[in-house]
Figure 1: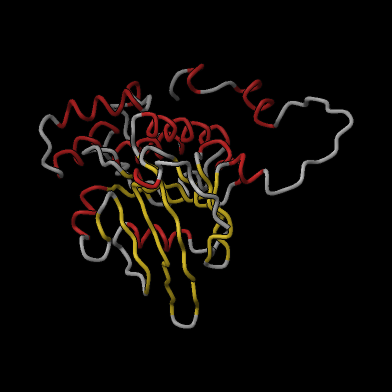
Figure 2: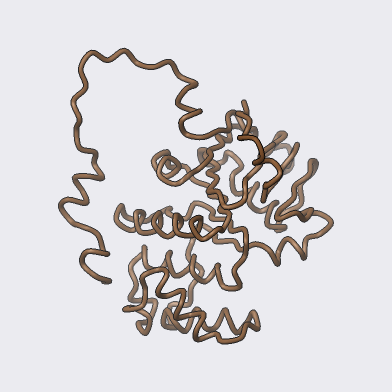
Length: 265
């Protein structure tokens, strides 16, 4: 089920997928996936393990070829214009791809130099500031917490200002506080105009971050819309009395605060 985007959004799509199919042997992983992602949006592709989320990301990032269907990223066809697609995207996988021997700043400078960008030091310093890592800039990454490593990993993926970024289950294995740190970083990406396609199996993550949510099940998109549109698919519950109770997140943050409050660890 697809809920039609608002008028004008289609013309501003950063990612367009139609009829995507992919099989591995006798296993049909994708069975005709259709989706559109508007520029500057955070789009959550939600599904359980094995639903095909990572396969979609690999096809869109030109790491895997689809058996059928079409896909365009930033206006380029992933099959016939793969080099243009790769120049327009960045991909952050499920595990942080950082060098633990180097400092956070050295990791960023290294990537900037590999991309032959002028002023790698200034680029590194700007990203460290954006991701609240300035105080930890000269510490070896081996001393970073999980949330700090993931934020550094996302920062590295932004070097060169790609208009589209793929985040494949970016908070897998992180503790609750680290997850919130990554959520904040992802929101800042979209506020800066970056289009984000996020895969996740966490319902609360999609609720917190996404402008639109698509649920991938058994290789097909079963629903696609905003959170409010998805909620309207179920009838409202009849409630006579509602008592506002704090969420687990409210309790957690009231007890431990945030790293922003306490400074970097």
